[in-house]
Image 1 (cartoon, rainbow, N blue to C red):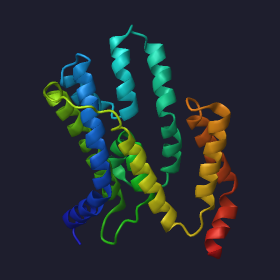
Image 2 (image 1 turned 90 degrees about the horizontal axis):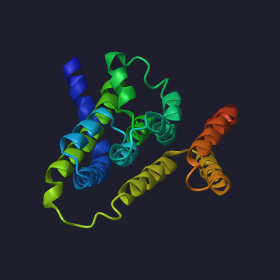
Image 3 (image 1 turned 90 degrees about the vertical axis):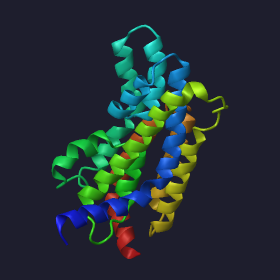
Length: 236
């Protein structure tokens, strides 16, 4: 199979995995564009922010920062807290990104929650290239967010509907991804550990501050129990 055929097969293998993301990203992206529009910003703001920042939660928060007093230190700390989970994503993807060549910088830049979930768990079909598969997953998800945000910014002033509740689309999507992973697992120890540790951190740290401690606890626990979990998989 020549290189062109491999790239084409990788694209068509990646595309179906991103379709659920397309629905969620377009809803939220359009909502974000409308939000920017109603806040007094040109469509150029959501267009370039979605293209160059590509961090949905942070982009929503950035609206109030742009409207407020310039405070780079606060912006840095806020961005670090909101996106700190990507530190753990990056550690998890060290082996996955090996051998991806010039695609690696873009894979790192474009690694959002959804791209991480797909690239980490998806089974790449025979004939497709791992690096190109992950590249197209990342590129397609980036395009969905960029196009949705741009359309929302352009047509926001023409639309009048209540967007309350649209953000739940992403929560629902993650539940579906979790359930798919649950069905693929040979045992559910790691999933149950993740749920338990997240609940404990939620009770201890509260709704506003539990995410980073939860991810740190999950990462540390899985590293400590790696051999035991591996033996459990082999036993299955």
